[in-house]
Length: 557
Image (cartoon, rainbow, N blue to C red; front, side, top):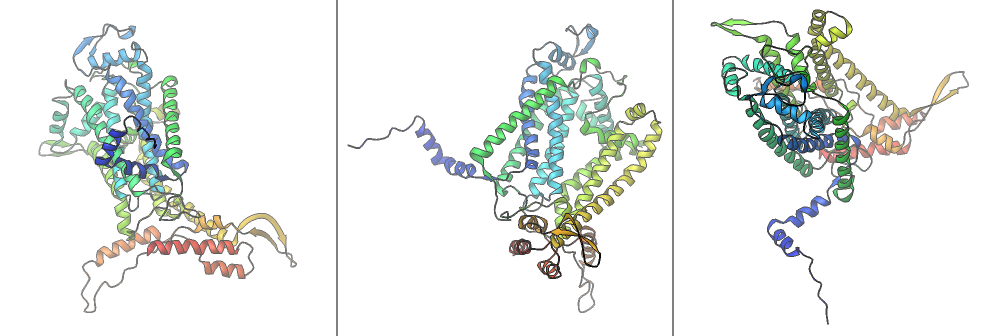
C-alpha cells in the first residue's frame, strides 16, 4: 500500500501564487545569477546599505520631530537656551538630541549615513567612469546613477535645513539667493517654494514632506530600477583568462553572494553606529535658533555642497542693470548655471563618447584606466576643479589656519580653477601613456629580473624573464583604439557632403581621444622580438596575446 507524502503547510498558497505570477521560475533564475568578485564592486553596496540605514534611522526621527514653524518657548534640559523663543522644529530637534533616549545617536547616525551615502555614490560613479562600465548596454544605468546622485544631494540639503538652527538657516538663505538670481522667474520661484517672503512660515513643513516622502520615494524607485538593470544587463567584470564578453565568472546569488552582501550590510551599519556614537556632527544646540539678522562665524555646509559654496566665494562681483532690474551674474552663473551644465555633461557623457568613437557594441569587460588615458585625464581634471572649489568654499578657514590673506587665497583660486585642471589633465595623461608603454615593453621584452650580465665585449645588460600567459593576457586584453579618419568630403561631382563638417568635428575629437595612445604589441611583433634573442618572450605569452585578439575579433563580429 503506497504512502502519500503530506504537503507542508502553506504549499497550496505558494503553488497558487506561482501559477499566476510565475514566481518559481523568476526566483530560480535570480538564485542562479552569477556575480563577479572584486573589492571595487562593493562601493555601490556601501551606497545601498547607507540608504537602508538612512531609512531606518529616519523612521525613528520622524516619530519625534515636529515639522512646524510656530514659535514656542524652550523648556527642555539645555539650560543655555531655556526660556528662548524658537520654532517647533528647532525645539523638537533639541528634545531629540538631549532628552529622547537614543535620540542623539539616531540623529548622528542619520547624518553620518547621509554623508556616507553621497560619498559612496561619488566614488562608485568614479569607478564606473574610470573603468568604462557606462558603455553599452549600461548607458541608462549611468543616467539613473547620476539622477540618484542629484536626488541624494537634494535630500541631504533638505534634511540639513529641517532643524531650523542658525547654521542650516544660513545655508538656506544662500539657497534662496541662488533661486532669486534666476533671471525673470527667480522671485516667483522663491515665493512658490517658501510660501512668501523668506523665511516665511511654510518652508519647514514643505521641506519635511519633500524630505520624508517625495525624494525618498524617487530614490527608492530609481535604486530598484538600477538593480533590475544590473541583473538584466549582467554585471561587468575585470578581464582575465576565461573572462569574455559573453560570460560572467563569479559566485551565484545564493548562498555565497547573499551571505557576503548581508555581512557587508552589518559592517556598514556597525561603522555608521560607531561614527554616530563617537564622532560629533551638527551640534545644533551650539548654534541657536535661526535669525535672518545673524550668521554663524566660520559656517560651512556639508561637504557635498562645498563646491557650490566655493564657486560663489571666488566668482567676480558681476552684475548687470537691465530695464530697472539687477541681474546677479555673480550668483546665477557659479551657483545655478555651472552645476547644471556639469550635471548635464556628466549625465550625457556615455552618449558623447559613443558618438565620438562610433562604438555601438556591447561591453561587459572593464577597462584599466591607463588604457583610456584621455578619459582618465578628463576625470582627473574634473576632480582637480572640484577640489579647488572645496578650498574656495572654506577660504576663510584656510586664511585663519595658515595666517594668510583671504583676498590672496581668492585671487589665487580664480586662476587655479582654470590652470589646475589643465595641468592635472596633462600630467594624468602622460602617466597613463607611460604605464601603457611600460605594459607594452613588459609583454615584448619581459620583466626586469635585477640580474646583470656582462657580454664578452664588456657590455652590461639586465636579464629579462618572460611574463606568464595570465599576465600577458591581462596586459593585452584591451582593444586597439582606431582614430576616425574623414574622407569623401565631396562626391564625384564636387558637391560638398552636408555631413562633412560634423564628420570633421568627430575626427578631431577622435584624434583627441585616441591619437596619443600606445598600441599594444601584435603577435608578429612578439615573434620578431623573440627571434632577435630577447629573453622576455615565450610561446605562452604569444598565445595569450593571440587569444585576446581572437576574443576581441569575435566580439566585433
